[in-house]
Length: 131
Image 1: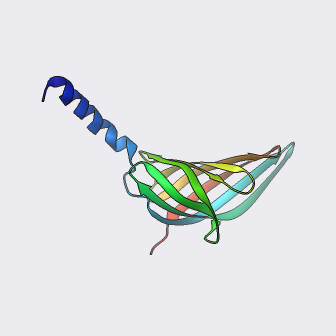
Image 2: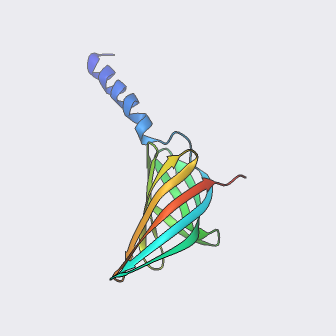
Image 3: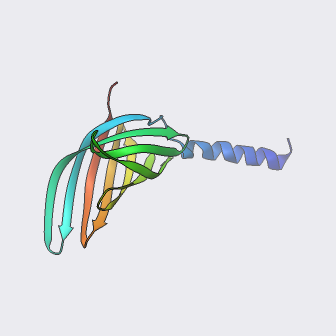
């Protein structure tokens, strides 16, 4: 192996861990979804639930997400980079963008959406369900 090939292979091996989570995220996840709605000068907070059924293949996330197992939408543009997970969900209303981090077995982070002049963000905290 010449020096250039060795450097290339070493670079690929160095970058590979950053492309995948420390653990496979495939499975069912559920938890809390605390939404803050903002419109004009009005701010409202609502507690809700969240549920995801995801499949991970290397750095790609697919599956569904929603408020419960019976109300789900397809995950789009799902990816894993290190312990970061990002994806979008198109509901019958707004497009919701998720930015989550795997921390101590929880997927935690934020979801954001804008629709008809209103914006919303939600604090997300999900745990893998036991089979």
